[in-house]
Length: 438
Image (cartoon, rainbow, N blue to C red; front, side, top):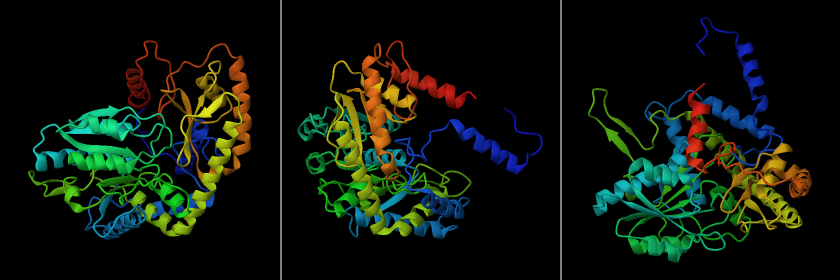
């Protein structure tokens, strides 16, 4: 495609853009169970308006846009106050959970090199930790050891302690882990890090705001945040269960001594000093401003109301799954994320997923064990009966099918078959075809 020789009518362009969304995921009606976190249309309109007020501003330059500095600092402050921080807590906003995790890995590397003289630092993490940690290890030249979890799919602190070595700079826990919605034993994992003289990062990207809300509602939530001794950093995404505009995460540090290794600064070119706290140069102002606006508009009580309804919805779904013969949850979740597996050798979980897909439900697929993943959000409260009815029907149809669905589970991608079982290379091929070859 080439750029048009002359500009097109704006209304015509917008109409085409609207039409192109026809085959996209139907998240507004609650058919999608990941990727988009939604409350209702009035909330979306407010969020979009707050974003639009700062859609052009660039947080690369604090002196040019001091309002964005204020928004960022205040978002960090609100999150720190809610997630166990104190007067020494510092942090920055990033574009998402992956960038926050990348920053935590990069910081651990630079800290270990500067403070401990470790040339090639090492990371210890449970097998359920987010792939962004492995991405950071790959990008920044570290090494990692992924440690098997216990039968409850929570991190095994004793096994992690055995994996620690002299070069270990970072030990990781999840609150919760994405695959199963369970919170790792953060206190014990942090103790492993302290004993090793290493940093401890808690990935609360998906769960931080929800877990804090459930805790404030009086529910039993395991210790997970910056109040736990030994936790040096925590990542949390307002654009998930904070229901803010996409592109808003925060990396919080228990103190500034570690965060100083997060920064990059350079003056060896003619253009002046280039410096920034995050990976990005240009930092869009819209997500930062919208995060502040949404958190101000909802307030603490608003988040508690959203969390209470969402957790009640989750419990209704879990009760419904328990009543379906042949299905069960992989692990009892601590919040609003769960995975469903087959408990019957004659029933294929991927076959059930394929039938649910035929009924226009956008659910995740997972492996080891084969399972169906759902992130429950506030707007799913009106979908419970329809969802469970289709799930029961899908199970019945899958039982009668000849074999299951042998496509690969792809987190963040559509599932496709890999003849040789090499799903990683298949994923690269799919990305190349979808993204880089228009």
